View (tube, rainbow, N blue to C red):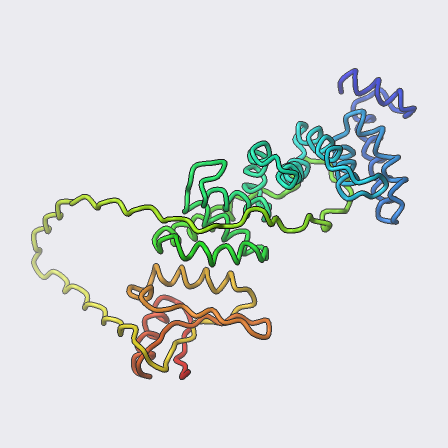
Length: 340
């Protein structure tokens, strides 16, 4: 506990124990009083409770003051003041403050200044930050272009339910090659395992319950058409020499039957039904990597009545549809032929 903080709290008229534990306990109790007032709709009382603690250096109180100024509750809405309070709390390791700081700075037009905070927030799993960083990586704005990571972050944001991210994935599909999308799906799974919660384990939890009052979706990070990079020439690799045949060697496995070619026809195969479009898109990318030749078919993502269905085709006949279903089922997914 610094002398500056102790003198600040004494000047605010707070009666405190002189032990570090007592100081922390009293501050947390007072912050909790403000949270209780906030929950009851008494925003002015909440702000009056937090302000002296925030000025004395309490990071939760500073974060809550940032929320109050951002939302205009108990005080007049003031984005600059909110940014100032978020910044003070973020410097003390308050991760939610850092998340909100990056998003608000971005919304206020300071994109370059916001980007480092947004990158940290994206790593922690903040969907709006993942959407913004994914857009920047796709376009090469504020950072080097990286389509695989862009697709991975946009996939994570879409899977969290962010509608803009799902729409952006559809645009990305037009420009990002299938192999890079497959790599992005794999990276998204890895990112999901590594994401940290927005509130650190050792971070005090006396914060205002206003996280549901999220800013409106970012509209300024749209995905303009982008020219895909030219494929690099594949270098010739010497074929490995076959190993000497051993006596009674096992017979090589029979080759898998070739899939029927996509053709004009009235048949498709339905691969699944989902509550979210992002899950259908993820499954298509996964199966395209597993089932040789599947990427040659047209994916159909159809949404009605709150259900999204994934289909592939078109196919010329019932027999062709059954053959394709067999390959999909062998990869571990459900499938059924459908006459259109």
